[in-house]
Amino acid sequence: MAGHSKWANIKHRKGAQDKKRGKIFTKLIKEITVAAKIGSPDPDSNPRLRLAIQNAKGVNMPKDNIERAIKKATGADGTEYTEVTYEGYAPNGVAVFVECTTDNLNRTVSSVRSTFNKYGGNLATNGSVEFLFNRKGIFQIARPEGIDEDEFELELADGGAEEVEFSEDYIIITCEMEDFGNVQKKLDEMKIEAENAGLERIPTTSVSLSDDDLQQSMKVIDKLEDDDDVQKVYHNIEISEEQMQLLG
Image: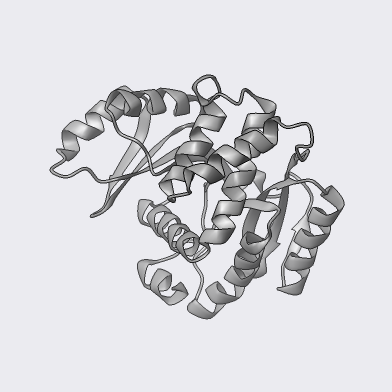
């Protein structure tokens, strides 16, 4: 997949998250709760929880919210969540992969199916689109002032990074899923904290759409992202810089 397309998709997602900060807090609190419940409530011994807390700090979530989520997970009355994925197609042949965390599977599948149907897409069987995506580790960090790009890239490559992309304000680091921990460790050694990090699904092939078709397909994706049970939505649209502006 072309680098500029990945940039556009990541920047579009970041812009959408900034507009939906309340929704993002809800999803991150759920991730913190799940991570603390299935592992240790101590982030030093629970990498998933440590990452969830780091991502929460990246969007300026108050410390009290983070601590309450951990406390809720370790309490006797903590909500039991199930992680589940769904696959489908938005209009114009766009592949969509949906990751959910829910306390009611029937409610979630009904809501996801309804969203696909209402906006001209369709929910498909598991495995229908998963093969169109590779799981990669993605780290988004604020660009340090006065950085030597070549030296920085070599340092990260030594830690397992596959690709390092620079923009005016941010750096995106990509690695194989298996190297995620190694890159995280390298960033820790370099005293650099990512604003956002995690395993993402990067499309192996992408589709280019006209402006009208893009807006039609994005209705499904936007509505899925609004669902409280949905944690992440991935698609294989190649969004140009101009179209990113169009989407706002």
